[in-house]
Image (cartoon, rainbow, N blue to C red):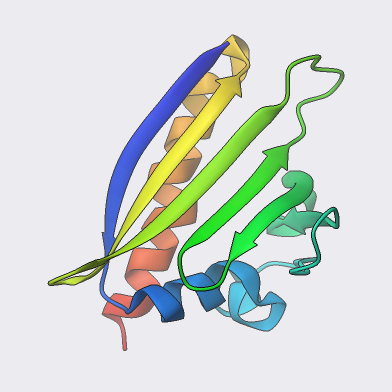
Amino acid sequence: MKDFKKYYIISATPEEVYQALTNEATIQLWTGDKVQMSKEIGSEFSLWDGSIIGKNLEFEEGKKIVQQWYFGEQETPSIVTIKLHPNKQGTSAELIHTNIPDEEYEDIIDGWNNQYFGDLQEFYEED
């Protein structure tokens, strides 16, 4: 199991980024894919037409999202924590992803950089 931590700069306010990560309709706008998302604690979610699935553990409006991502029959939960910090360029999104299966690590990191935060950064740069 591996952990990953990185900061991403997004040209939008923390409140806008929070909505983009938690509002089903907004997620569909920047991903272009089918999404299931709810801000209800314990609810399950699905992103990129089921490529990412998990459970929502914690929400702090405009500041923090904590989710468990599912990787098969993994005993130790893989936890994703996204903290949103105001930044002079918009928002600094602090990502911490723990307990990533070794065999999934490179694909997950590529996904964070190029799809998840990469697409979100592009979405706000186009505005």
